[in-house]
Image 1: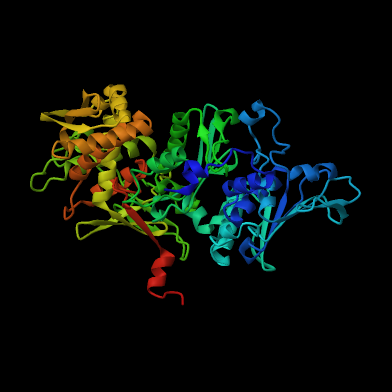
Image 2: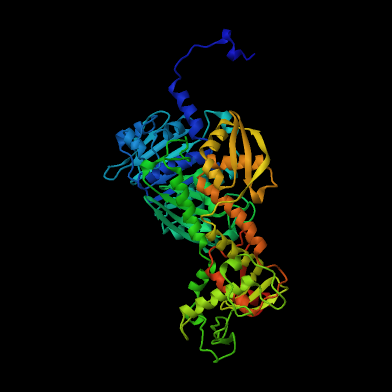
Length: 625
């Protein structure tokens, strides 16, 4: 038996000494040098700093010094600043419920002072001199410094050597400290940051715009391979940039989410962003993004975690929907449209009067390396051989064509393209075709097209699959999934939460084609499943759906289930490899890709097209060297 728990060894209840209380608090707030860096940067930004410099020795173990040019601390308040629960940020419960500053608890300096040698040097504008406070002795004396504050933390965890043993190598601790600065730098592009280690400058970011700061911190590639996010609903605004699906990573190490300027790791935000990528990410790849949520401070509780890295939303559904729709809308725009916006006026594809030139005859108007390409496209009847137009519904459910006939799905695409072209552009009016004109089909799998930048390669099955999938989604928005009753209901032992979710979400489950009813107080019975999933594990399906409903918005669960089924339908309905297409059909597919949302990836997350520029092609053949 543990002697500490035995009646004979019982100790009296007593109040802990202040120093031990502070060291316990430090265990929650100060995990490693990066924790100290984070807290001190928060204070510097709250003080209105425009330039923050971090100096480190031994990865922050021997020294952490944070210098800022903020408002400073009054001489008479320096001693109070390192006391527990002393702060200028809040004074009432109302202030706590509407926190607008990075820090607010007043615990950080006291906790840091209890496990290190802390010195506080500060000067306010108008003071005759700065004043230096020794955190251990309490001695206060004049010193030299400009307006602002410097906090020095030496020999971290010297008073708790057991904690120091858990620290990693200096290089590892330095990396964590730099990451803490990066997170603040992304939140405040208007503030300059510099990081010095062992007397050498290792990182520096000057005050600039948000877009430039994103490029400086995350790299130029992030800016080039991401799209702008800008979405508002009610009092919630979501901005930033979302990485293209092509640059998704194996790990979720490039995901930055901010709420009112505070970096957070929140399940609601993470799930919302990930769900926006569901239709365009392959496998378990993780998206890259930097998202900024601005909202009423009274509708978010930041006082739920010692390190303030977690938050709780008053209406998590509202935030989930705002973030998801913000990213979805940004990703929905085909990259071909961005390609069109980048085309110079001389690179616009012009439709000339019929008969002036042969079909799709290219004309190069200037010498490379910047060719200006024009070609003429006479009016072409894109109907099927029988002369009748194929409806969109027939296009969604392709049938095997007779000998010599075009696939009906592509006949519909060509019909749509003819109508769009004839109704939107008059003869001679420039028509931008970012994906260019088809020139060949490769092994019945890929379409090769020529545009102003060079060569476009299209996976015709993946592209057609996305087009059908998006059409099916539009047509199925109001439909319910058909269900199949089970001859013998599948029963399983359920938790109290699962039973409550099944009872509260009966209508939602019915929409999904599921019927789950209580069999006993602790048992649920699955009596019907979606027809398409009738051969699967009914119990496993029920558990996963109930778990989703318990954690996330019901509409999200419904949409995900529908999309999975529609994706399967689109995959089987799309044109298969080795099917020969005419140039008209290939061009029709390209035009539909330019107009279809999320057409850059199929619904399995694989890319549908790639661009090879003339510069890249020249490099393959060593031209110009």
